[in-house]
Structures are given as structure tokens and as C-alpha cells.
Length: 296
Image 1: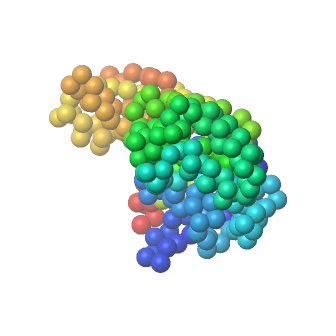
Image 2: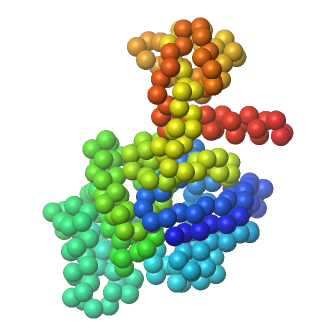
Image 3: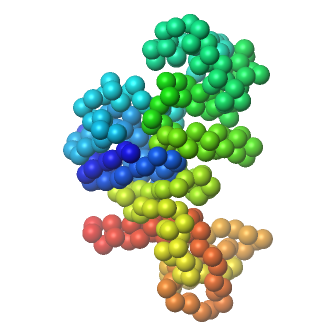
């Protein structure tokens, strides 16, 4: 269990990246969902011992994360959003080097660890290739391989599927799902599908504040029966946005498909549709923006 209590962080430029964040994250896949600049990376970097918080606490199975950094790093696997690789070194050699840095000193044991990770991440057939020749998805799988060295109890992955094609994305998410059965994995992303497909628990964060937490199915049920859909022309969109609580829009067959949040049937040609996590996400962000505007 990872426990975060009243965590806050303000940068020297005055940006408050985290505002009194409290979370309990159990074993399994946990999705942290939010737009760019929401505070996700700040939270991930703080948990990963890469920066300090102004106030609050974090504990991992009794370890004080903010004080006992060396102990945390022994049980931590981390795949940051920007993961650089040495382009002229093979995956096999690089993993061997990482394993040595993680304290796997015995050469035979290290070889077994590296071979196991290459098989687990489906990189065995390309283990001799230089990392600079890898596709985006292959590099991400290599990133997970290095994060798994030392059998970590906590794995943090920050925006791992950004830029991947659909096939590589599915392969990467399946790999995370298999790993997540035995450890705490925090998946930080702005891609709603990544969370709805894999995570048993989740949180939505915006402007450094938690907006919703819980199981994806439960947060979806909280707005079930309150989402309505209608196709409108481009000229009609502004009027509908003034009159209704439009939470999302997208083009479909030359018209604009709008989703509206309303506890009651809004009439005017709207049809009820099953809510999904994207509706929860956009509704939560809209509510947050409205509250911030009232407080300003």
C-alpha cells in the first residue's frame, strides 16, 4: 500500500503544482488521469524521490518515502515520460549495466535477470540490436524492463503510451497488466482509455487538486443516466454551449456530436447514452473550472 497524505508543492515561480493531495493506492494498476500541467508529473517525481514536497507525507509499506530515499529506491521501478537511451548500445548490454547498478553483482545471476526481462518484455529477438534502432514501443518496453530490475514493489510509469501506434500501445498495456497483478503500478496519463482498459482504481487530478477517486466503474455509475447526446451543425454549437452544460464535442460525419451533462432530460432532440470514463473526465474538469472561476 502506498499512502499519500496532505501533499503540497509550490514551485519558485509561484505555480502550485500540488494542493493537499491525499490518496491510498493498493496493489494493482492505479490510473492517475489529468490534462497536461495538472500536477501528475510533479506527484510522480515526488513519489520517485526526485524532488521534495513542501508539506505532507508519503509511506510505502512502512517506508517514509520523503525521508528514507535510499530505501525507497531499492524497491522502486520508474519509467519517466522522457526516457533517454544510449543509441549505440544494445538492449542486452544496457540491461546488464542497469542490473549491476541496482546491486546484482553476481555475473551469472545478472545474466539470468537480463534474459528473463528480455523474454518478459518480448525483446529477446532484438536483444543484440542497438537501442537507437528501436521503435517507440520497443523503447517503452525496454524502459519497463529496466524498471523491473530488482523485483520492485512500486512501479511508476509517466505517460507511457504517448506517441505509440495502436498495436504497440496494446502490447505495452498488456505487459503492464501482467506485471500489475503483484505490485503497485501507478499509470500517469492524459489518455482516458489507458485507465478504463486496465486500472482497478483511479484518480482524476487537475490544477494540483484531486477531483475524483475510486474504481472506474463506480465513478462512471455516479453520472449514469445523466449524459445526453445530439448532433448539431457548426452554426448551432455556440447556442447549445450557452444553453446546456456541454462537456465534450467531436466531429462525426460532417456534424458536431455534443455530449451534455444534465440530471434531467434536456429535451430539444437529445438522446440518452451510456456514460463512460471520458464523460466523467470531461465533466470533472468542467466542474473544477467552474469552481475556480467562482473563487477568482
